[in-house]
Length: 374
Ligand SMILES: *Cc1c(COP(=O)(O)O)cnc(C)c1O
Image 1: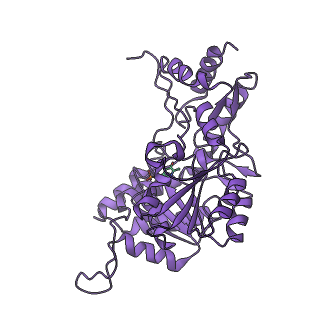
Image 2 (image 1 turned 30 degrees about the vertical axis):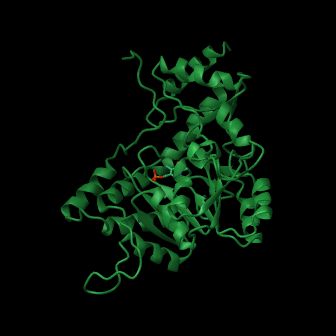
Image 3 (image 1 turned 120 degrees about the vertical axis):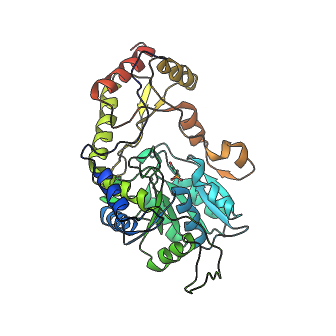
């Protein structure tokens, strides 16, 4: 056991006011201890209000949200889906659930997210594409202007995986509201949590209602249990939604604090030539800075730095390993110049937990600079 205080990457952070407990108690008192219920309805409405979207369906996970979005776009056996390679596997796995074929697209240096250049190349190579999935990694918005433009040009719907970017705005609008569907996650490590959960936001009422139907076991309107379509048990529980409603009250505070943490790192490493910070606020955007991440000047320093920091109980981790490098996805096509390989090989996520104090972040900065002898 280390004598040092644990400095984690990101952990759940309930409100000091106890909003979450109050809503959970309300759920208990009403005996709505079930999937569905009034807390779920209110949580959906509050997310719509927060993001400026029109319709929403709360689900059991962000992964379920991606899955149903693909289904709603009619993705099926043998269809091609373009997917950002540098991401968490949950972005890509639902493509396989539907037996479709992922084609992975590289990132660019400017945004760390999907490269518009290689997206365009992919469209030239594959004339028939069912959907595009872009990700806003670590809260950094993708180059939405170009990506939305290209998808429109080829008339292919865009799914925004905004699981890590709730609270991020791009040109004044929330991420998740630029594509056909925006997907959110409330997993335990995300900027706000329901202990586990997800949501789809969209302007398409018919599609949202359809996904709600599928998520609720696809039960037809009949007194008996009748099913004319394949269903899923994907709805969010009323108790989870209660936690989410409380968390939503402090979301803006959490974004503010994550951005402060990012700026502490930025200042702390301003004289360290071996470290470059992620492009948080490119593209006239305000990132939620979910995880402050950096790129080192030497890839062979990543693991030694992680191990050095571990001695001081400082938790860090490499960036997501790109999908085209994953054993499971190796046989699928990839278009790019290996920017995502480089980001992965040189990158590192730093502690960004909102419960951390300024002195904790200063301690991390000090230890990192010490490691580089600057
Ligand atoms: C967390 C995450 C997901 C999956 O969300 P779950 O709620 O954990 O299923 C999908 N995509 C990205 C980029 C994520 O970080």
